[in-house]
Image (cartoon, rainbow, N blue to C red):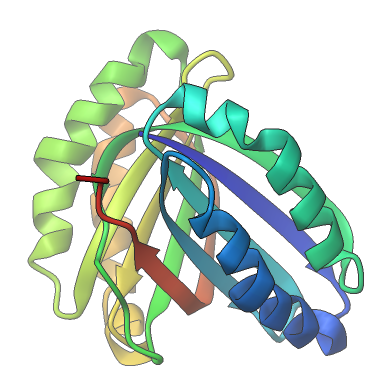
Length: 205
């Protein structure tokens, strides 16, 4: 699968308007697109940050939706966003929850990784980090997204609530350190968000 992410920042006071637009009209537009497989919406209300991820069957479906969903995105974010960054990723490893409760939280780690080490990072996450994350209380699912040509990766992890997210921080830091030391990846940032929406769409029969 492939993933398109949008990372927007703006006035925190205007964030809820963008959230309402994305979870109503934006959601309806997505579910009408061929090859759409699911979406996540995550926010930091205090700072004024919003991140979306939309999942697609393949690169062809993702690219075919780009123009239409770009128009929708611009309209949905117009009243909030001062900055918008859109990226495209390969979903190298994905264990997404079918849904998440209203108290769920999301942690995102951004990394740089040499293209020659990308497969080693996939192995380190899938066979090293992910089993340890699954053992943590409240862990609901996680993913590793890659931009092989650009030498970038993001790891996302969803937890059931704020308490389980907070309790995981020390152990997650150790897991992160072990994985990066095995692959020479460099961590650029670690961010935490409230989960507004996580939805998966089953394949067409």
